[in-house]
Length: 348
Ligand code: AMP
Ligand code: MG
Image 1: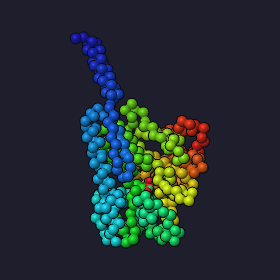
Image 2: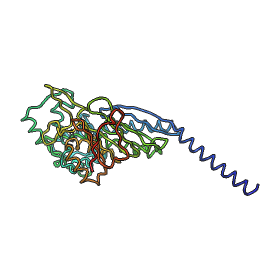
Image 3: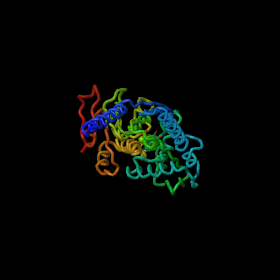
Image 4: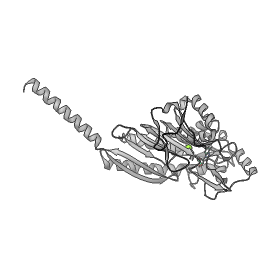
């Protein structure tokens, strides 16, 4: 065969194999699954050339979630967290996940000056958010509850946790984020490079981009209704939203929501209706969205400027419907259909 012909054939073969590669990328099949864990409906979409193995990964994700739920739930009778809450000040040996999450959550409690506080559980219970039997505790009770909220009293040494008697842990503000990071890691470990893990409104973790290379587009709920006011594009990134609209009750014409101000043990009224955090870490998204909701807009903006090491961006909607976002979302934030006329203030 002449050299030129051989080269031409080789080029053809390389071209053909590239083409097959492209075609294969396009024919990645979505494998979808849903489960109920951590009090939330969760939905997963994995893209894979091998649907059978993706199905196995899905099953593994569900198993992992249930294990996490069993360890971390404050309401679960024999969970690590429940054992700590019943310990009356005695040291308790917890599982590795619980110790790890608690240490990371405590670091966020410290960074946020206690706007996030993992010891809010007695107050969360007093308002009836754990049972659905809602009530408005009187002022004296709230003052007493606020006294009991103090993350600095929690001691973690390795996997041994000590909590003073009368105090109780609630990891609900960060557990879904922690789960999101673990699930995303498991997906990647199994060679899946395109997946969307939706752990309910407070945490979404994107593994890679969509199979066609474009980012996932995630809507941000308008706290005032069922529409989305913004779209955030994510690739290898997580996002989490906290808002008063997500869990609340009404009494005497007043709305009481589930995000409490650790200083008062009452629903945080900072003027914000929702906070969305975008970060490579789902734990940071979950923990900080709750904390920034407590802090309010101005303090949050300051916090964002002062903490570049936490590597996050944020979108805020105030109770009067004004929209703010941090500067780092220039490429990935847009207003949703029907909201294009709204003004967005960029925090620099
Ligand atoms: P999230 O939905 O992630 O914003 O977390 C809210 C949940 O965390 C509530 O349902 C409570 O169980 C708990 N919680 C409420 N307020 C706080 C707070 N300031 N710090 C930590 N956990 C909180
Ligand atoms: Mg949270």
